[in-house]
Image 1 (spheres, helix red, strand yellow):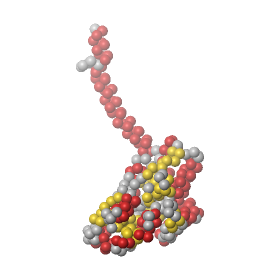
Image 2 (tube, helix red, strand yellow; image 1 turned 120 degrees about the horizontal axis):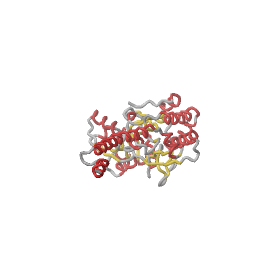
Image 3 (cartoon, one colour; image 1 turned 90 degrees about the vertical axis):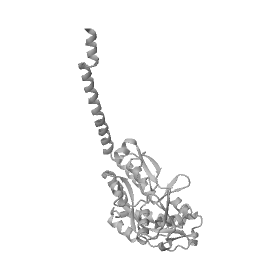
Length: 318
């Protein structure tokens, strides 16, 4: 009798204890996914400022060759107007969270991976040469626009390329993951040029495709082309040609549905624009000698950007 009772207590085959165990197992199997969903919801609900306060660290993205917005000088020193804006945001975060010793990490991003790395929390802020447009706004959020640019062409003066009509049937480079790729493809279709597109992983590699003869021109935002030309071994060999195909705004990028952090970033940029500090920052990077070669881009502020110093708009390109 004692043996049967023991069997019942441990849930032997066909006995009441077994049914009870099954019910318990089913309950845990049901609760586990619910617990995981709850954890995921909690993680998703944590905004950037909460995350930074909890970890004691903020992570900034930088680009390796987006002159003069975000690029490397030497092996590991990111500089540029976007880097300066990012550092101004960090200073405001330190004040807002009362964390003067906040750790700041830098992570290199490319045109192809910058949006996923913002989405998944690897980086908290990306201020580089990223176009603010409606398609990207489905995945990330943009702060106040801080530059306006259009797609043009960088080519060697010896190539004979003077405009887009000269690209018919020729190889043209651009950088993977950029809006310029779509702009160039559309222009190619609309004008039946039959261009052969080749792609670099970053702007330096896209320029190298032209330098090595694998493409006749590099299509990209005009200001980046001027920056690459200024940093070239012999700037006089290069020329920026063709009309601007489309005017687009640049803006700092952060995670979607994070209104507190967006408000902080917008405040930093807006205050710079209203105080005159942004105009000084622009002059530092666009109308003064810049590293690494101390060349002056000589690019005066556009009418669109002058207007946004007052409007403080984050309106995307379509």
